[in-house]
Image (cartoon, rainbow, N blue to C red; front, side):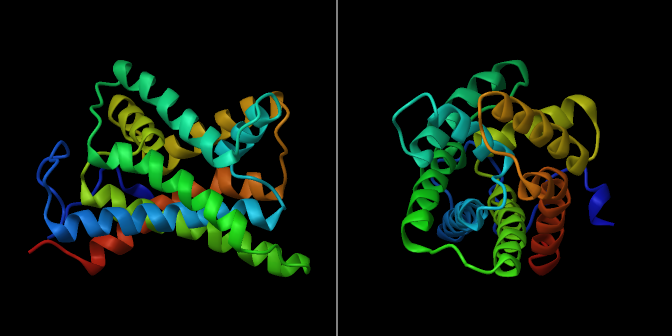
Length: 217
């Protein structure tokens, strides 16, 4: 059952060393594709306008007090979260730095190019697709094993410390971040709740699907 996954699977194109800065081309490509899909998913969630993801609620809350784009604030948050890794024994890799750059760029690009649907049901479908894309993108780039992004490194670090299922740890993080973002003035909505409670299972499903399709021989 994918909801019981407690570790990141390995496949044929996974890097053997998360600190590898000269990976195989296939590993590097899957990393970049996964991060791009992740960023597109985050962008779709924001464009749906029926509730930001928890981390975007936080970014929006900060944006109310700073004159920067959401993408750039997302980048700054990613860098700030890295400081928490000191207490979790996590080490940044190539994927960690590309995560902060590619996802932030894809969010700004998505907002600039994709219009918001006028019909609520279309907005809701866009929201659900966004959550699923974030989960699948996470599965691709985490399995590449070139270092988790700042937020996912926080997730995997806490999972190792607590030995709780990945889905439960991710849900706890998202709910906490959404609460802080709301306090700062970020907008909550049904999309925020869907993301907070759905992203954990979506990431676990992404890991499960990718590992099944690319089972390591």
